[in-house]
Image 1 (cartoon, one colour):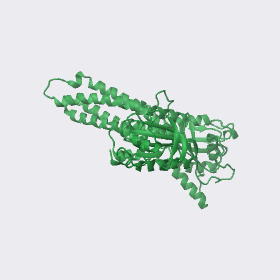
Image 2: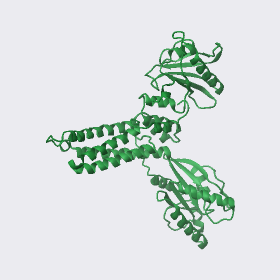
Image 3: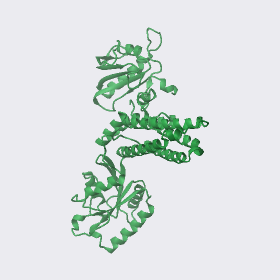
Image 4: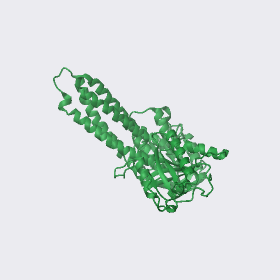
Length: 468
């Protein structure tokens, strides 16, 4: 641990603004003298006590509940005190100031300050303490932030599963199986003089194959969890007046973008997050793509291309009412060529034919045919987007994951695949086999934080709320 990890910390643990209840939280190695100084009495552990919260002169600040959790039976693994008061910003700031003041006052039993070094907590520092004191692992700590930030019910339920340890349990099971396989390989390396084929008799190949299959399963579920957390970004692009803004409004179910018959109405990006089967879809409406001398429109078009480059999928919108017009066909062909040239291969391109309501006898077209006006075909488009994202219906054990977890699991898979090649070579490559298994275990340990750098921890916990 760094030196700051031993400091007593305090913070307002509830969201900024007014509320019915507000919480001030303190965590430290030993809080008994501080509690006595702050509240004028001791508290029984894990028992709510209703009492006045007073300033240094004894004047009441507020009246509320005090809860004391003795180490190690607390969220952080240290002594924790929570003061639950009315949720006014001024009241909570007064309580926070009183905690800092009480910490400097003398403990009659020792003649020293009650709580030396009490300071304001940094973002995520309470959760970081819980991780450092082995109350939760890193994947569970991240699940706390994901649960708070969840934008859909499915995301919230999956984050709750991760917080409960479902994801961590999968990783620990993989680690244990991997350690057992490593033990067999190391035994073979350590006792080469013994005429015993440890690996063959222990079915090392079968164990490795089973591990690879399980890694694939966990990786697939983790990818689904990452999709629930991050969603996908979808950009609607096309010529002016193809119905891009109407499609955004139809998908969102609200009049978000201005729709007029005038070409070039949309000058800048308009974004809205919707959900399809619990998956967040960040839909971006953009300026119509066409040659223009208007400086403002040119800026909007430049931003359209920029948005397309950063998208996961692009909906190339076509206007069925103009699909027979030579000028429109030519412009669409030029635009399609430009999109194909500029877009990364990782960006999915979906052709969408709009205004089907105005052309009842339209022919068949590749892609999705719909009417943003009537809603016909929208469900087909939603399912196409989920298919493009690689989404599958979640099961009961779906857990939340992050992109770093997915990348770590992919590294594990790569190391295990290399290990399989070395195992096939038998004794000539056992040392390489052992090294690949070691690297695979390290990658697994990065997920739960058993093997991680302080820089990684700093990045992760800095994204948390103050007081959490």
